Image 1 (spheres, rainbow, N blue to C red):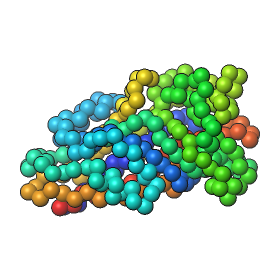
Image 2 (spheres, rainbow, N blue to C red):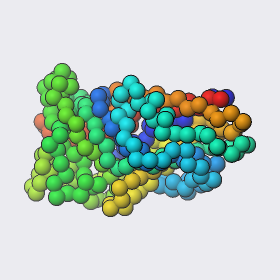
Image 3 (cartoon, rainbow, N blue to C red):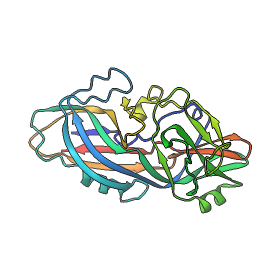
Image 4 (cartoon, helix red, strand yellow):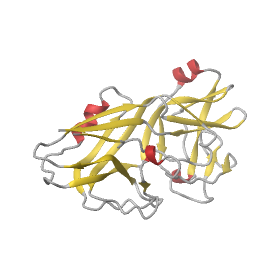
Length: 261
């Protein structure tokens, strides 16, 4: 039996700028996994309902993975243990829990005169990091953007109607922010982001999601084997929000988890 679980295609969800933004490659994409659960069902009352019925924890810890690495699949696979799953139990969904902080290095072509890259000096200043879209640096071409890209810290933001801002410089300080509505949603890309994503409080350090298995999986007498592969060629999102200035965000990596017996 083989089941494809889009488990880590989850990371950052849409805001109103991403509809106009573009994606590009990430050469670093570090996430910290806290827990993975399998579920026998998920109510999915709304896009933020991450209730996991019949939860069985198959991975727990506080482990950081660079999923742009060629060894990432094997490393994440070791995080998950399928030993001891109750025979005969059928699982339909999965629930990963992650730290809201990511480290990403890369760029995307926001405009013909702006290849927007990550910048380590970019901060959220006095602005709450869960309400802001972060500053990127425009380069003239893809080669310069790739060569000059630096590790940058991003955060999964809280769903909000009007409190968000675009950071207008690396410091994101007074006079250099522009108001912006920020709202994450799984509606238009359910197959990529999962069925639901939690809307954590501003003070929360973690978030979780619900994913539906490609096919339900019923536990047999043999512990299944889990194989994971990743792709980060479209894992950076950028938009030139005014001439010569761009915002940059973490976007979803492609990933496939194969469960075989």
